[in-house]
Length: 169
Image 1 (cartoon, rainbow, N blue to C red):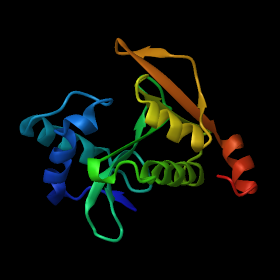
Image 2: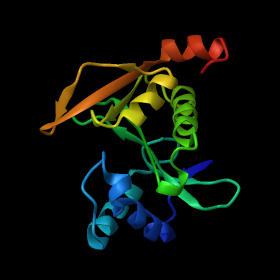
Image 3: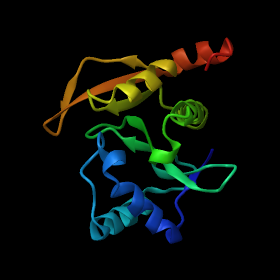
């Protein structure tokens, strides 16, 4: 997988992602073209040199096809960061989400000074929970965010270092 910033010419891929009901099932309501275009501009504005914030284009290395989106975004109302990921249907069920979370966790702890990385999931998204557990995240008690029940996961820098040292990051 190749993870990189979206290019201004990739608004169509962003729209296909944000308008796909299966992809958005546990994330947010699907967006029409106008809403997705405005959201795309907001996303591009998040990019800053040397900072990981934003939603990033995920490309299948062998084919160059758009596979999904990976993100580092602020946890609402805090200075904390959460990792996010979602794949287009042809790329689901192939271990790519686990690959993205492992890549993202490594990137986060080697490129930021933050001590905790969060993940926020829908309580019904059991596949995502499995990915996070596999990648060393711990589950926190359920928490309502904007009136919606969520399950939050965390991974600390200390936990990351101990598993990285043992070769299990």
